[in-house]
Structures are given as C-alpha cells and as structure tokens.
Image (cartoon, rainbow, N blue to C red; front, top):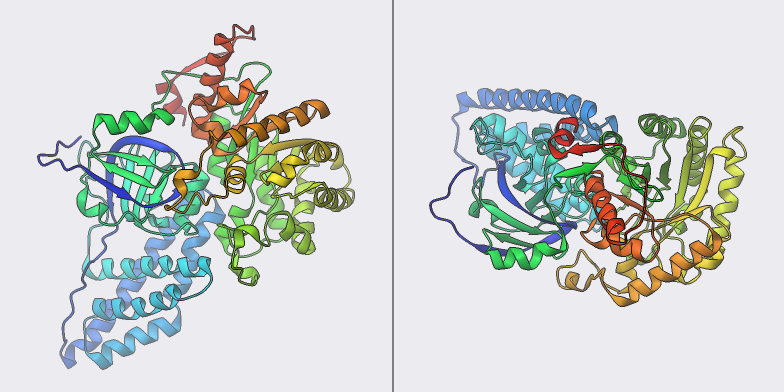
Length: 567
C-alpha cells in the first residue's frame, strides 16, 4: 500500500445509493475524464484529416464496447451487456455523427473539441427532462463522449495504481471514481469491492442499480473527492447517512463502524444451524452463482425488475422463462423466490410511458402497477409457472397494501398458474410486508398466502415517513426505532399463529447484531446480500451458543482464505 507523505483528513456529505458501513483503503479509478478539452483552429487542408481522426476514434470506441460487452455477458449476463449495445446505438446515431462532421468542417476546429461541444449539448437536453430515469441517462451520453475523446487524445484510463505491485483492482477496497460507469465495472474485481464513492451519478443510474444489486455500500454526489484522495488512503463510507470520511480519526471510526463489522470472519460456516436458514438477495446471475458457492439455503429474493431495467424494454414471456429457468438451474434443488415486477419509486421504467407522478414512492407502484397492467402481470406469472414445472419456486408480491389487494393478486395468479400443467404443486405464493397497513392486517393476509417476507428497507421508510436517499433526513432512517420492533413482533405473532414461514429480506438482516435480535423475537429465516451470508451464519451460531441451545453441528467449516479462493 502506498504511504502518503501529506495525509489529509476530510468529511464529505453525499447521497446514499446503497446502504452499509465500511472502512477500507482506497482504489482510485480514472475514466480519463478531461476537465478541459483542448480547442484549436485547424487549417483548410487539415479538415479531412480531422474528420478521419474522428471516424477512427469512433471505430476504436465501438471495438472497445464490443470487448467489454463480451466480458460482461460472460461474467454477469446478457441482459447487463445490453447497456453497451445501447451506447453503440447512440454513438452511431446519424444525427450526432453528421452534426460532429459538419461542425468540424464549418467551425474548422479539432475533433475532440467538437465532440465535447456536441455531446455536452445533448447531455444538457437530457438533464432538463422531467423523467428522473431519462434525466440520468445523460450519464450514457457523458460516458460515450469521454470514450471518444480518450481515443482521440490517447488518455490513460483505469486504476491510477494499475501495474504497480500493490494494485488490487478494487478487491477488498473502496473504489473512488468520478462516476460508476458500466465500463468501470468491467475493469474491476467488482465481486470483492467493499464500497463505491463517486462524484456523479443518480439513484437510478446503471451504476447505482448494479451497486444495489451486488449489495455494495455506495455514496454518490461526493464532490471533489477524486482530487483529494490517493490510492492507499483510508476511507470510512457510511452508506446509510451518505457521509464519507477521508483518513478519519480512530474516534470517528469507533463511533460509526460499531454498527457493522466489515471484517471477514476468521471462520465461515458452510451450513446454517438446524431450524434456521440464511438465503441470498439477488438480481443478477453473478449474485446467484456466488450464493451457490457460499451454499446459501436458497434465494430469498430475486429482483426481477432489474433485468427489465438493464435491457430498457419489456421482455417477452419466452425471454423471461429462459432467465428464470437459468436461475433455478444454478441453485439446483434449492428454493428460489422471485419477486414480481416491482417498479416505481427509485425503479422507474420509462419505456412504459407511465404518467409523471409528483410522488412516485406513494403512487402507481408494486401491487397497484401489477393489477393495473394485466398483460405484463400475466406474461411474468406464466413464465414463472413454466419454470416451476421442473423447479420449486416461490412468487413474492411487492408493496401489498391490505388483504383485499392480496386476494385480487392471489386469484389472478392462480388462474394463470392453472393454465400450465404440472406447475401448481411446485409454487408457493407470498407477500412482502413493507407497507404499515399490510402489517397491521398481517393475520388476515396470512390466511391467503403460503409464506411472507419482511422488506425492512421500505417498511422503515414508510413507517417513519423518512426518505433514506434524502441526505437532509436520512439520519432519521432508524432500524432501531421501537415502533418498528413493535410492528415486527406483530407480524411474527401472526406468522406463528398461522404456522406460515416468515423471513426478513431487507438490509437490516445483514447488519451486525441484528440477525440475533431478529432471532430473539422469533425470526428464523434471513435473506441478505450473498457476501453477508457467512457473517449472518456466524452471528446465528453465536446467538444459539449464548442461549445454550442444542443444535446439529455444522457439516464443515471454511477458512476465510478458502472462501475467497472459491469465490
């Protein structure tokens, strides 16, 4: 690790895009961004050469995107690689290309200056759009612009310490960058990155979606951080509050890091104590593969909306079926829980042309959206039912408000399942308890369903009336609030009374000391980010030992180094 001669300490406040607390060294990533692009006048006899330079940079950029796309397809999945095909379409848009060529000829300026000028104009147009998701698609424009300019100027990009002996390419490090781009993801060991800090990028950007999917604590909007940090600096990232501390004092670390222990346990148990289960929250095939390697007891939550967001379009029934079947095959005979399309709030789908809402978090989302779009609902349930002919699955309904809405969803789902021979016996239907009204009607809802899961992220947000992504009030987002625990006990009592399985799939299950607290009130099933599975298993084991509970011993213990090698 590099030793910094002039160590500076600084505190920043950004916007949380993925919660969690972590203290680790920095890996600084440079996308080759140009603060100021060189601009100069060219002679008449240089115009054609400058146009040729632009086309060569365009071709080189296209070839780069093809290489990255292949890598992402292999390591994560085809849906995620579609990002780069979309960028190629924008890059070769004749309106943009012709505009750049004409400007070079008319203004008689160098190619990189014209590329910067034209793309900046398009980026500004995106920024002014009302739709949040479309507004943040401006990051694609910015990324394309930088790629072309980098190839025109042969700028260096990648980790600033790349090639040096101490470079870890993000492994067990907090990656600091101007923006978390799709290309950046392809350059780093993202499976082992422990945190991400960026200067730019919104909560609905591709980078933010991927960070949340992988369960990586992340903060954006941290202006100036890339100028302040060096590889090897220590950073404390608080993904709950959006605070970032550069080279913090021991007092600050001890005060904040007590909430979550970010150290890898010395011993990671390969199986969960009998009577309990630790499953994985996933969104991507890579998450599912990691869950399988860590011997997760199943998939407690597969976020189906991510594949729609990644492809930026609706998927056909056959396309969905192939993806669901693939997830089930990876997990072999273990249960997989698919949450039906959960859109709205921080997960808009602009291609659906949904009317702009003044408050999308309280609008047409979750169960309301599904019931209001029978064609989309039918297609997804039919694809899942086809997958259930050979695999045991669970279908989870998002954002259910009360038992009336739940009954409508159940009836519609069973009607679709009945149309697929041999599917019904392999499907369980459940609900997400994440709206207070549904929690208060838990006893009635449990009579209609086979299982349930507590989505603590939204439940805390709605119960305490606090937007956890708003830095002005995010400190009020408190999983320790007495009202929350009183409500949790009511849900647990209702599940026990109905003798129906209940799990917690929100982020609080992965926080240090929370699994044992949840176990204390009767929760025996947890679903967390795959990387947190060993930590939660260890905590449950220690909890049972403290209670002097007899349980079947683990089949095997994995040393942490062995775990890393297997991952």
